[in-house]
Image (cartoon, rainbow, N blue to C red; front, side, top):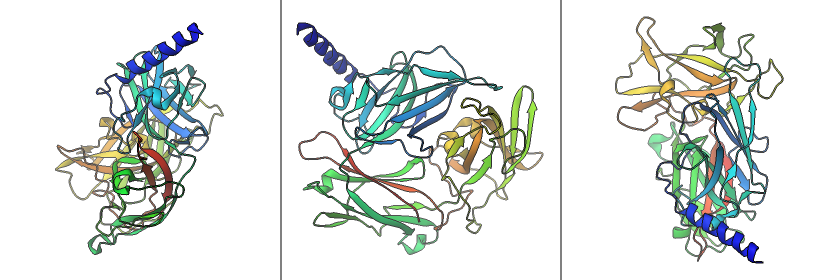
Length: 421
């Protein structure tokens, strides 16, 4: 009995100490902190293009990533609870974690028959060591031995088993000036068994477009209500997004022949190279319909039936534009750049051939991508400057509903719904 009490006391002390840790050196978003970590996937089950969302106590999430440096690492992870707008919540880890406050990532495999060697790490949770006990937003924090050595952070969500009903649609903006360029996401929430007495303060919605969090709409409150139903139908633009354009695509699942929109493949200076068909800037073009993964990608090698056989390829992009980019930089963007602005994905002007170009290392697979513009001195990602914007674009919108019950210290996630135009 005394031994059990001692173990419990030490566990509580460890939780208290971990809660006091300073997280100011990491960001509560999807980010990689060291060189050589590539191709991060975070999913539920076998749904390769899904958001990392799990039901409380339900199907586990799996994260995988490649270490191209093949460093000797002692990888661990923990989970950090956040508010509805991705700030650190007030809870102690012992309040939202069942089990230990960290776990070891001890599953890894070496790449097979690849030019670029790597180790692929994998972790799945909840498991017998660690599990979230509350719903809401979380950060998965992976580090090397101690939290002072961050490797990566990833957002994920845990949703309540008892979920609200969400209905709605996506259509052209209600504002006349934006009718042909923007999309509006209107929806209603049926509160079901939840008693919501002060919805202005306790009920919030987030809207995400495709895989992007940088332009997500946070903290949206209801416009009107009737018994048990809250309406988020606005006509003042607060729930609108630029429609953008359909994503471009290419396929490098094979290095034996040219895949879709690949005009050349070679092996030179001990590296694989693939050349994507030249793109044209299209800010004022008509809407072009095409199948899309909404900016996503799927890693695969169809030449060798081995789960660790996907090689890394220097993939070359070229962009032709009839107008100069004088006040900002242009980047390749999408899940292939982790939905981030990456230095290696920045295009530079080729004076000889009069086009913009870049090349960087990505894993074999099939990809969506766009060209985005970032004005100098800002972090603002403009996906319309080069691609144009249309109300017809087949974007995927995800609505998240959060509720903080009376007397509670955290935001429950009580509903998720996907919408397309």
